[in-house]
Length: 151
Image (cartoon, rainbow, N blue to C red; front, side):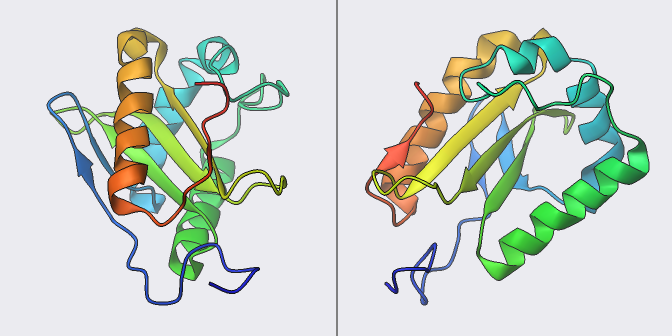
């Protein structure tokens, strides 16, 4: 793998993780309203979640739907370019309940940084999601050194 490549050239990124409690699919513009509603309902909860130590996200004042849409488009472009992978977390009826981010790290110690959050009303799924994603990274992704942000 070239030093600057996030994933190997022939690697096909998984596009789903399904458990009894939730499923992951690539985050995209089609999730805008539900994604916006999910994180704006849980700003303080997300800010207290492991992996969000700088206190910059989510913004305390929120974002407009248009700003959120631009952010979702950026994540979808990253996925298409294979420079980062963001997944929406959906419950069994298809409501957005969280997000998972797989992005390069600035540290030579790690291959990838993993962050995730769930809505405040689904807080009991936080560790369940983090653990499921950890297992998924071992079984289906190419990285060996995973920064789970203290999880």
